[in-house]
Image 1 (cartoon, rainbow, N blue to C red):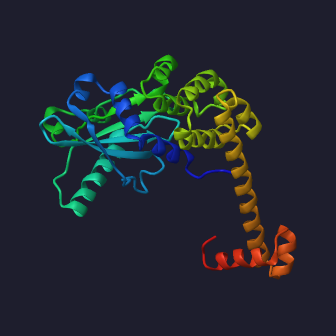
Image 2 (tube, rainbow, N blue to C red):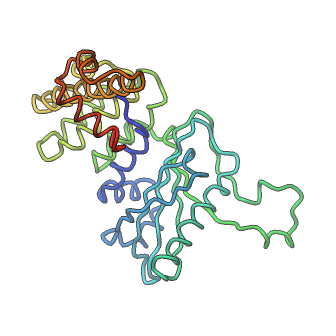
Image 3 (tube, rainbow, N blue to C red):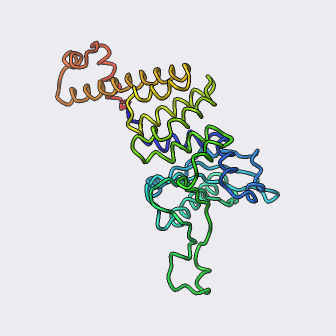
Length: 301
């Protein structure tokens, strides 16, 4: 069964983990900057600041963190959806930062904090960082003061070797980064199968089942693998993960059947069919069909 906004969902599930966000900062931001961050104070902001003008471009996770003796800063993890680089990224990032500042002032009456944008890119085109002033021709020094110049951190996953990724301290970050790096390719899991299996073995236990389920659902919705192919890969990890795959597969099948039932019932109502006829079409009891019809009329389905 297809999951809507699957990239957003998996990105947010991954980077909502403070341990993942912490290790990401350690791996990808300059050491002299990370040293000024009090990473033990990293606190997630559960709100999203992506508006309708940004939703096709980014998914976001925002954290607040102590910054030396200078107070706090906000760290915005922004996952780039597009498979090509943005020509004018500062414009979208500036809009995002304004959204954060306006929300803070309106809701908390607080002084705005510096927002540090971190763009995570995995597209086909080469993305070379350029300053804001490079967008404009024939600028002289007297005009620069009118530009909202700021910097952002760019993490191009295409430039990160697989071996470096698998060696990350946090293996949840390793797995997610590999999936993000290769998800634009067809049958991409086959490319990273050995690394993926080995990493999953390192986190395989009952406590981490929710993450394993997220990985399974993400692959199922982005790679085009059949359930049988997914089972053949995850069986190599452990009996525990094999059981999770089988349970998840059955849930997907059940959900798919339920969706088809509901769509058939809705179509039957549009055609003016009575409850008894619809129940025959969906092979369900009249009572169950009546319950579903009631939920449809209430706008719940």
